[in-house]
Length: 289
Image 1 (cartoon, one colour):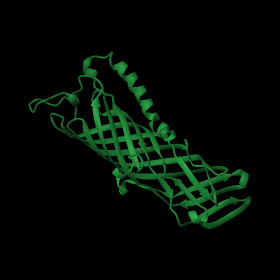
Image 2 (cartoon, rainbow, N blue to C red; image 1 turned 30 degrees about the vertical axis):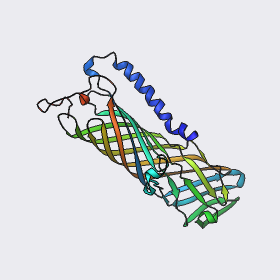
Image 3 (cartoon, rainbow, N blue to C red; image 1 turned 90 degrees about the vertical axis):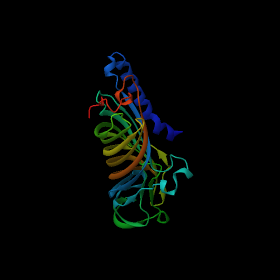
Image 4 (cartoon, rainbow, N blue to C red; image 1 turned 90 degrees about the horizontal axis):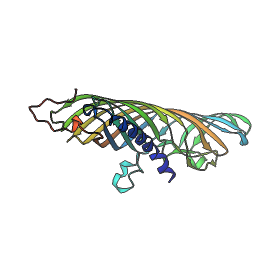
């Protein structure tokens, strides 16, 4: 239940925004009624930069840093998407609204369920204070040696994006469109933290854990006006803080390069929308290109 609360709270925020916008549009003339809503669902793969993890455990006399650790994702979908719940692999959803007359600017809730795992069996340099004593040593980072660090139920990037669409190709009847889409935004991270340092494990949990910002570009192919396929690449920078560890907290920041394949639907939210108005081959498109 906690996971559902975290993942779907953004829908309530956007629905409130859309309600306000819809009321405002009812007061406009018909020619300005051009809103459209879209939703997509897909799956992703990630590559992470090296990152240092700062651990503070005052009651244990610990204040140290694991320097430049390597991490990887855990795709899940490569084991078979339909053999498990859809929300177990690394997935993503987009919920957005195009609001202007040209239908090329919008706002979007952008959520990526990404998984971040510090790679097992690597040698990691530990610098700082351990058990009240200064330390600078290399340790084998492995579960057998008392170390693991999983954001395996999600590093979970949530962004509130501004969206800009650029038309590449559009048939007169709007039944085939190819668009380039750019997105930029900022928002919180909602990680699920599960870790062990020097044999001391935390109590795993979801939490608000900092913020992230991202840039995304996508190629979108829309067919029959209502359905689309979107291939995206994204770079994200995330800063995590106050992550729960045994008797203390951890912090880190890292960059992510992400590839995403999504399928979605788009539909009008107001009347007289030119994208969903029948045209013939002899009638020019009413959508500005």
